[in-house]
Structures are given as structure tokens and as C-alpha cells.
Image (tube, rainbow, N blue to C red; front, side):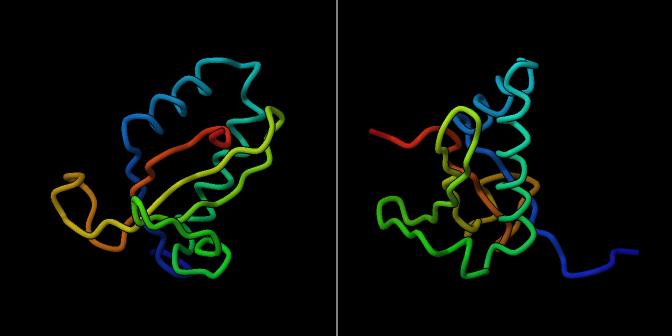
Length: 105
């Protein structure tokens, strides 16, 4: 039995998955991984929240959540899944993570 509101499933786009896996492999970067996971968990817990939608981009249509890490300011760039064929296990209103990493120059 699940308590509380439903949590969206996350699908990580190739770049985001590569960064996540690199953080997992390097114990020295686990504090950064912890902060990134907090950001991802926050989006999954409530993608419709004002906090998770405060920073909006038009191209591609997406939202950015800032993440303060020991490596500097990072962000999680995400959007809701709108087509079921993007990820076999995701349905509309789940979360597609486009980018995880440092702020672009």
C-alpha cells in the first residue's frame, strides 16, 4: 500500500544518465550525487509544484531545478512525458530528465 501522493517515475535521457552513472562510480563525487538525487526526488515527488516549474525554458519546452552541489551550481532540466513511446516504462505525466550537470556557459 502506498501512502501519500503518487510519485512520478523518472526516465533519464542519455546525457543525464551518463552523468548520473559517472557520479555513482566515483566515491569522491558521492556528495554531489546526493544533492542531485535530492533534486530528482523533489521533481518526482511533485512535478506540478511551483518550485519545480519556476524556471521555464521554451526550446526545448522544459523546466530547470537548481541544485547546489560541492562542485558548484548544477541544474536538473526536465519535462513531463507527453508521449508513451519516449520510454517504454513511462506514461504521460511521468518525468523525462533531459540534462543533469553544471550550469551551461
